[in-house]
Amino acid sequence: MLNTDFTPIDQATWSRREYFYYFTKLSPLGFSLTVNLDITATKKWAQAHHVKFNAVYLYLASQALLAHPEMRVGKVDEQLVTYDVLHPSYTVMHADHTISNLWTAYDANFEQFYQNYLADLTTYGDVPGPMPKAPQSGNLFTIGSLPWVNFTSYTPLPFTPLTSFFPVLQAGKFITTDDGQITMPLSITIHHAVADGYHVSQYFNDLQALLTTPESALTAEA
Image 1 (spheres, rainbow, N blue to C red):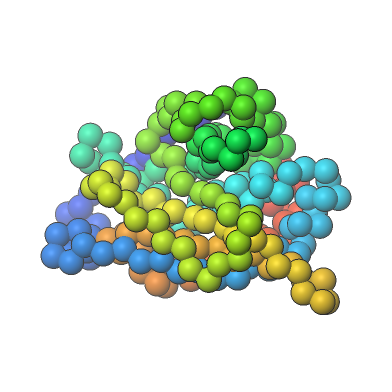
Image 2: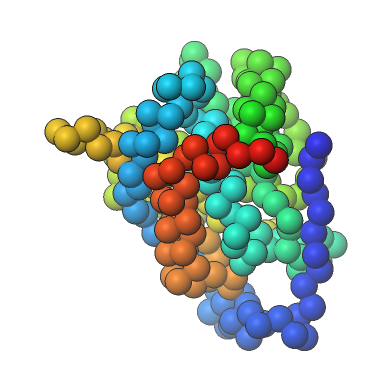
């Protein structure tokens, strides 16, 4: 079931009110930060359980957002709201190297999420076009992967006014060290109106904790 629930933000009492005004009206600004995450344990878990790593990546990144309401701020009929959850919107590549954008409904139970993910790939994965599965809600966030390049910075550049303030996540190529550690660069780009460097650092810390002990999240009961 697609969760589209949200809570309206009362801007009169919102602790972020002045910062939101400043970074949207006086000095419109966003920022991007890239870190290397240790994915050794998660990669091994995915291999041992015969599941696609990309699905685990999408799930854990989405789960980490649950603890960060500042990253779930959107608009509904011009009203600022905080969504209960965000659903990952990601790209798939076709044989001719063109891409399509899909999305899968986040579910607290990983097994259910994984079955939803596989069903979306089966139904839409080979359909050409930029977005074969039409969006059904306003709480989709962009998350991708560039497995061909290990980067130190990645910054998407919007060319239209923002309708949400959700983060944009982009992963890069895995690097394996001599001692067997596997790392993955992950970039986050977000509007400064809703988040500061502190919030981003806390998100990365939370995500790294999930990646270090994936079994705690991936085998938990919903």
